[in-house]
Length: 287
Image (cartoon, rainbow, N blue to C red; front, side, top):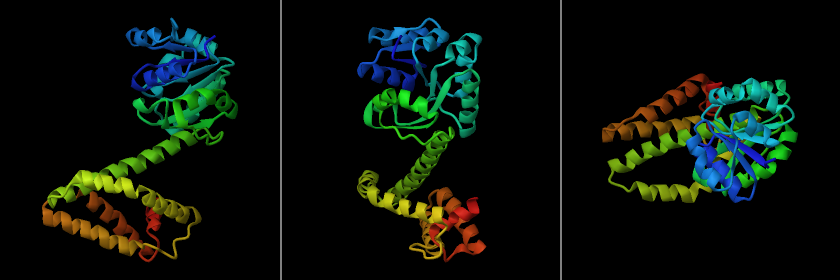
């Protein structure tokens, strides 16, 4: 028996297998393309001849492929379903909250314990303290998988037995991240339009990130408690800023898609009568 099995040796799956090997675990691997397994066998992994044999080799199997559809193509066979009985399946492939619910039901149907996970890190960060893996699902599965997951990431929060939680939190994080990307790239165009350095601005943002985090923490508490009535920053005040962004884009002759989108949301909120409320009241028109 191996300590753990890794199914899928793409960029992320391969990084997972390598990190586990480097931490001294006995690792069985399987991949649809046999060529990708060769470097890991040289590093000490055991190559399983089939996906079913890979699942049989360990109590815990970690699956990390491109998506849940690919995962089902690998796992939803008579041989693998039989091998899963009494074992733990840790799903680290990319998926939606509903896909996590469906996968848990499928695993339970075949007598496997299930943990859903979402990786908030790049492949080169696997095995490092800065990596995060969000998890949810069976607590027993989490307990038995925890040593392997903590070998992969310094931060492995468990969000309870609601199996969709990890995926929802991951998507919420990505929504914040991609929104930040778009805002930052528009900021870069503002700087370029006035001959200023983008990298200096990036350094400044890194420096003040803790303060930004505190602002967002405050807004999250406002939303959670629905306490919009005593604003530190009202929707009206924010609307003034958005209109300045529109004016700057006009003056500079640059793309205004980002501020125009923001303006449409803020205007809708102000027209709905939320102008004197905390800026977090914007969420009311997004529900």
